[in-house]
Image 1 (cartoon, rainbow over the protein chains, first blue to last red):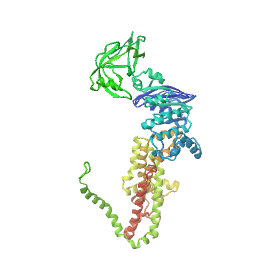
Image 2 (image 1 turned 30 degrees about the vertical axis):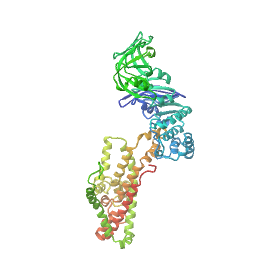
Image 3 (image 1 turned 90 degrees about the vertical axis):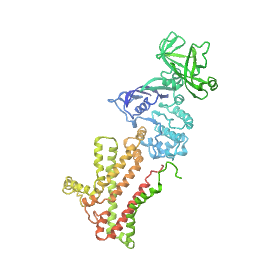
Image 4 (image 1 turned 120 degrees about the horizontal axis):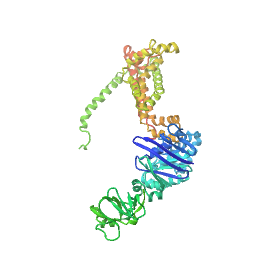
Length: 350
Length: 264
């Protein structure tokens, strides 16, 4: 069974134009900046929004065939949707929340409760089954919401930033559990991920949504090595340039140029890992082909290094050790010399 | 020393506060001081009083129920959007709240009275006569009380987070199941409050009732009407009946105070 979503719809100022395929047994993560249309995309697939053009097909069934086509109501689609905020029904206990979907599909009350209790036990919340949502922590509530979505045995599982409302300390455990749950789920899995970590940890493939369109789809490795937009490059932490290459030199529209390994000509994308960028107080002597002076725009501490933002014609980020940052007297700002080896620049056709 | 940022002159504030409290407390005190406590029990248990009380309770509860049955669909429709037609209907429904009840009674007579624009048809085709009947009391009370329910229920429905209904839909619940098992329980505090306020308003209804349904002992003479009659004939009885209404209304307010849904 495959989900084929090829549709367009307008949502305020956003024009969503989606072309996406998800196979059974794989998890695809939708990533993209705020307002790119990720949630609208999920809602269209769930049947909470109607498409204006194109269609959404799950297996053989057309879920939404556009204005003149068939439309399967959300309650008949067999989709499980987990929302950003858990949206557990506040007037029902945890077990009744999980049993809600089963009751709606006609399972008798007692049996629905029994099945729901089983799902709750799998999330490790058996002892909280009588608790109201308000009595649960964010992580616990999101687990109950997961159990609620799984309990109706959906064919298609949609998760809308399931981790964003959970505090950081609980996120690690929840992410690990979610991974196990996703792998155990046999249907089609589509996830909207807020952070790169979530996307990389949970998804087999990543679809990048920007301005209502999917601009890149690929495995985590493909996305990381060849980001096709600034957003993705920032997401994976790479420096990213778009220019025109001619026999080993990339010219950029706003004036800069980079010497690279020859091979690709024409419009290109180039990425440089921040660790491959060297910074000097004085003009360096020696082999680097790309050397220029630029102002230091900002410094922020990262996990085990300092990330230095350099401005100028070719703005980029360099990662240096805290000791090096001290020696370079970066805190004072001012001009700095940037050196880049041609071999460290990855070039691929745009 | 007063901490900065607090309202100034909190002692001076107590003077108007005391005046306001007295404004409300003195009438109540008057009832309590002048009440014929020796004959209180006897007065209360006299057949006319018991009849009026029983009739009042029946009619107020019926009016509240009718307000709910007719008002809930109306509130749902009103809460669904902001159109011109909805605004017009809302004004129409809210009007009895601000209209003098006696005017409402006159209008009811002209509509559902024996010679009213709809009353003739009601009597002729269905054999239903409303003026000067207990059903007329219920109608008059509903006319005055239902706006309170509709507006409270609509406010509750408008503040309902639609995403819960979407969640229910993705779990396989159709619109009806979603409405009864998600929306209604989640807006229940508003519905309860609306019901209690409507019931309290119906219980105290006087003007529309006496105009439309008349003042017939045992059939249309509710407690407020009995107070009015007693004021002319035996003022002490009026005090007993008034105290009765005060207690009933206070009980309703207490019910409202404890309307919060468990689990909060």
